[in-house]
Amino acid sequence: MHHSVITPAALPPPARLLAAAWLAAISLQIAVIQLTTPDLIVYNIPWFDHVAASGPVAAFAAPFGNYSPPYYYLLVGALPLHGLIPAALAVKLVSFACTGLLALAVWRLLVAMGVAHAASWALAVPLLPSVMISGAILGQCDALYAAPCVMAVASAIKRRHAAMFLWCGVAFAIKAQAVFGAPFVLAIVIARQIPVRLWLFAPLGYAAMLAPAALAGWPIANLLTIYLHQSETFADISRNAPNIWMVAQLAGVTTPLVGLAFATAAGVIAAYAARLGATARHFAAPLLLRSALLAPLIVAGLLPKMHDRYFFLADVLSLALAIAAPGRDTWRIQAHVQLGSVLALVAYLTGLPWLAALGAVPMISATILVARPLLWRGANDNPLLMRVA
Image (cartoon, rainbow, N blue to C red):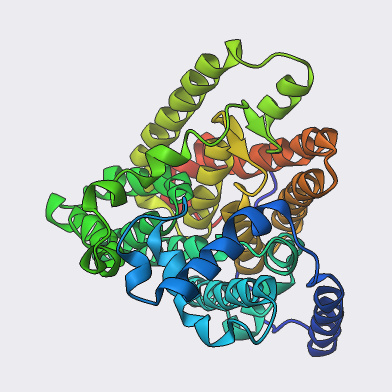
């Protein structure tokens, strides 16, 4: 393996290129923002209408929808727009606000990584194709849970463990997909032997996010079981997720593989936590960020019942890695992850599931590229090589 010292990006992104990219992105999003999807029509817009009809407090007196309440809090913030603009547009503006929060989180991560001109580089986050599709077309809030996940990674890199756990709790209260980063947190806990008392910040963050809904009357038992109800939404082994199970599904092999998929995912996640738990205490920031990226890649890549948007966190972390540890391999990783995600999203939008199966190829390739330096024995065993890739 070629050895070279990893240094964060020292120069800002080219100003003219960034401006041109933003102009193109804005133009593209204006062109597609009027599009609606079945999910928007069946779920998001009725939720927005419910909040508007019931009122910002009374809407939470009883359970509604199948999302966790923190997303609905943002819909409350958009209520002044209800009736003034189309509901779909208001929902998408909420998604754009979530993207702004995500860009701020990436900025903090890049600062933790020692990247110069971190704010300028963070402006690249809204330009990611998967981020633009999520907001401008789908009107989804994946950026809302990804932002605290990114903050948790930044806190881990800075060894601020109480903040790491707090952000984990916040992220999980927003969306269950936050658990895709859990193997990384587990490895950090093992490697650094973090005191149990700090773990309590996770349920504290979780409770703080759900408290407004509980105080408005939403039954606590329902709040604690929302994700159990979500697991009943669909029975497919893969729902346009760019992973190996999507390939198997198109080949006609489904139900018999569910048990194998869970067992494989559990085994690989355990191996990840054990391996990095034994070595991550020596890792410098670049390998820590690479470890954080590997977690959602293996979880979403190996678990069954994954969705086309479930690699969203990997999309963002791969961009941060390419900026913080620039090199041919990190930019190739970013391109492969983004290609896999975009193919999966297009598969959903077009109803062509084979595109998601095709997206599994670059996504699996990216996973291997990310894992290789972490599994290379020299990089894990010699602290002097922690800045080597």
